[in-house]
Image 1 (tube, one colour):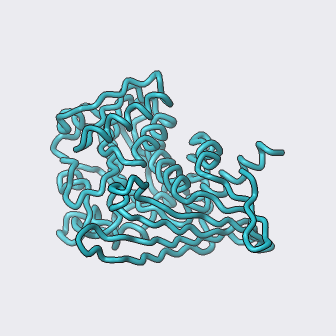
Image 2 (image 1 turned 45 degrees about the vertical axis):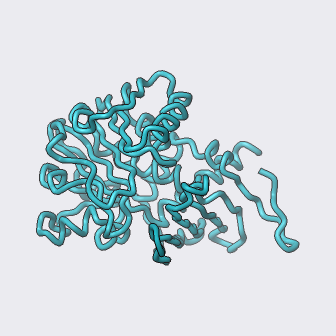
Length: 328
């Protein structure tokens, strides 16, 4: 938590553990929801890519956002899938937060942990509006760094008592379950082999993979399920199949500019004529009561998370405020 000195300038730096500690979902979820209600004055997104020679593409995402006279900031998130073979996290980066009235640097913070907490809080914010109130079974698909945060976040907004967790590889799944069970000792967390059965038993299905082709089959969904698609962030990636789209009553995104023309979970069904972009609802419309949340316990709700600088700003501001409250 100590300030770092850069070229004579002292800057407060919040490391990964501090960001996690101060980024409690009880504060982050309402912060995300409030940001959707209040909006931002400026928000942008820039993606730089380095095509892989023999492996996956490396990406650099730059996401600035500004709430005039309050705060503004920018996140640089670097996604290097090949880092797994180097025993490094696949997401690296940093966030800089500034005072909205003076432009002064308030702090820098670990961008990877900020991204994990923000992304999970964003999914939980959507689930808080779209999942059944009595949702008690979560199916988690994927066991990367984000997955434990998603489980924790969903459990913070719904009475989840059982988690059915599926991943292609056994060892990462085992590690993720052990890590999460320590945080949620009262939740029954089980590794599963048959994904279809787990999906069919779940009230909430959360996907956080790097899948190029769908891993979630809509035919397995039960009535009243809520789908949370998190992993795909490029047109060549997709997690939910056409049946997921067709069985859902309504389709929600967190932000149009990071999803409609960007994520394969939207670009492909739109191109195939299965999904009309004019009917897609974003979370700002939900937060402002311009569009409906879940209407009954039988409908299937479909949510695609694309992220965005406004969500990072809401998270960074909440983390900074929590840190200031602790040291006051």
